Length: 182
Image (cartoon, rainbow, N blue to C red):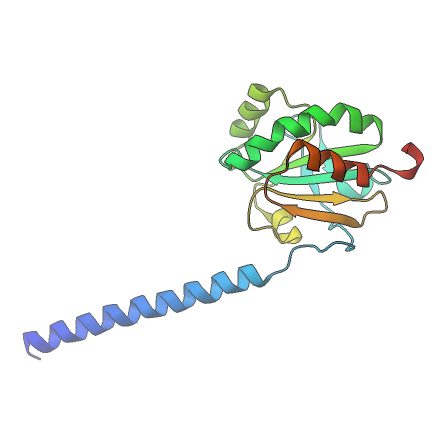
């Protein structure tokens, strides 16, 4: 085989490999985005995750049964996530008294990074670690931040993609206060 033919063969092989890689990437990306998030009115997927700033694990369907629950997916590398955390902390004591729990599900790689963020920002609401992304996947979350407001009966009242303002957060928390506390 001549040098010219070898070069042409190598070039075609490279182009074919790049095209094949692009097709595989497009298919995988499309599959991931087509997976729907948990919809309003759906039963919230149960989970059990270890707390980073507390003792033991939180089991959604057992420990928080009968409460309104905000499940917030976040990470320390997500700037909009970090912007809404002070709002959650500000409202947490008041809504905890009303029977609403805030659970922040961190997707960070290490607990040390999460603990440093908690300590720096004096966060007191439960923060759990979804180190394998299984809870994120169960909820169909692919962009951060994402919040799910869950009624005391375990159904999703609403899902919110993107950062929350203080006013919006307070309105959504009001929607999930147990009837006995209103």
